[in-house]
Length: 65
Image (cartoon, rainbow, N blue to C red):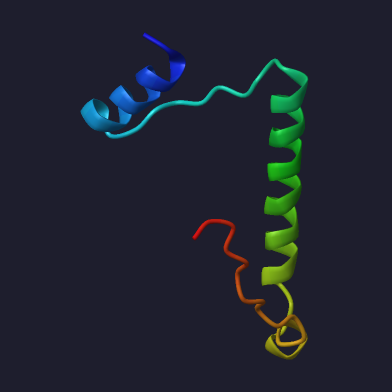
């Protein structure tokens, strides 16, 4: 059984899977970046509505289809 098969099986049977990113350098970088995004989100949430309104939501760019 491949890793992809185990992920699919976890989604079908359990409804989720755990992705452990600790250890590999790319995984550690991803976790640091995620923490940075969380910090930025927390800082943004403290801004007043006038300041927040300066950051217009961009339309998503669809990669597929």
